[in-house]
Length: 543
Image (cartoon, rainbow, N blue to C red):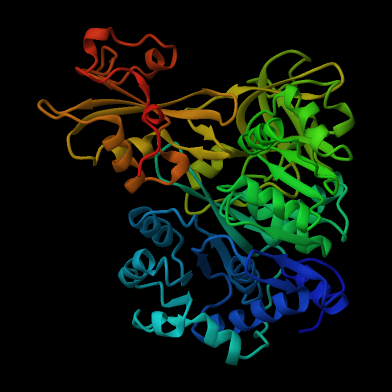
């Protein structure tokens, strides 16, 4: 493959660095270390196999895997094949996986033998999904009829994908995010969107090719995804962990691999600080600490700098529809508490009144965004797209209306006020209450359910469920939680559950969520006997 002179397409950076620094480590995991040439070869062989199986320009390729080097290779393989990738959280259950693959019209699915019990039956049900690739031992792959063994492709497959004539305006990825209707929405991102975004982020984070970027977040989450994209864009190294389930192990990896960039959400940093209080941690290699998803409490910063005294702390705000909106220069973290800064390089972010005029400093309005990073729209949802992409400054231009409330100060710095819809943003993920409600309503014995978001210092918001059981049904928190975990990804499982005899309703019969949100809860008599309002976690973890 010939390395391009300029980075116009998402995979161009991989080809450039494979040619210029073939042995420089691209991805390091617990199981393997891949240089840029090896990563590019793996992606190219998989791309050609997809093409030989019928994947064409513009097709969608789904990646349903745990964090690992194969996910990164699959992302770039889809791009090299001329297709668009979509990374699906490996916690996703069968019904939601079926919806995502059907909604996207996915032509191919890349998974592994461990997840095949979920992936294979779903793939078999979808006529448009003609290619299933599975990683794992050949004998295990053979148990799934028609599946293509990834190991065989990498060992014997052609190493040169066919040219597809892709241009920067073509679709590069679908990133699914929860929507107010309950069904996830596919955010369409072009090569131009993603190449610009990874460049702008790398610029303001002051990244360089010698950086080693840790990622403990799912690559299905765009914050995690962009750690991989920025690493490849810069020719840097991605140190990829499966998760943050074992924080002490992650700390060891930071030290052993001399990690320089640690992205996290407040729960990650809170855990590190807890470890630090028990036994002081020293992370001298770390030069950047980046936070998004929820506000990083100001009192976290001194402790983080004790662990990593040479680090710069970046606070940021973004949404999937444009990846990142703004960031606060680390030199201003203490001078501008609560601010999320200013627009990322090459873009504009401003607060407007309802009539479209600029809001004055201190006046609450709606945040709008202009720039090459703004999404193409939502996949097959023209009405939702029109709601978010509104007429811009110039004829024919569309800008992003976030529908989030913000203010600015006299210096133009942005401050988040609140959301204008009922979407819950928990652990950086968007959670649609109606999606959780629909899943919980299928639990035997549940008559009614209402879900809201409640403030949480670490998660931003936590999911709380109010449940009415059928007459004669008894169910404790532990049993309810088991049902939840069987139906929902972990970040959607309610942190709290309150059992009630009835939900508060308006005169028209609709559930009065405002009463639940404001804490105007029904009287104690309305709660089911033996089911006080408390967190499902009070009884400890479920086996």
